[in-house]
Length: 199
Image (cartoon, rainbow, N blue to C red; front, side, top):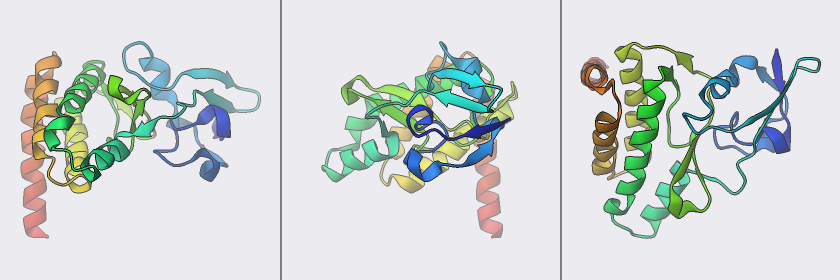
């Protein structure tokens, strides 16, 4: 099955933060299965309808949402201290803990692939873009998931080390399976540093 983009219905899930009009065309079906299984446990756009005749999947458009990337950039541009982002970091940690406790690996965790649903002060987070997602209970896979987010987070948002530390602490405190995952994250970090040294 292929997904035929629909500007109003598909919205952000498949776009990774890009406007749907730029995405008209076709993509392979693996872009959408994860939200079908995670509704109610992990916040993701609602799947309204799967049309097997026309091979279309219609998804919720998260109206007036912003990416976490844009939100953090806005906070930083206003000159606010990084400590103002700590409540957001806690919410992110809780969301990722719930996702990993369901053995769902996102595969492309960046601050572009997490939306804030209005009103922004509620910090209502929505995960999008499950194109690389898969199911796995392995701590290694979850550690890599967190490592991808850490690299994207710190390279995109300067001076937010304390924010990501808060995210990880909340993840560790919330997830029932966090012990082995955090240990694997440390191992993945070490491998990443070794690769950087080798070039």
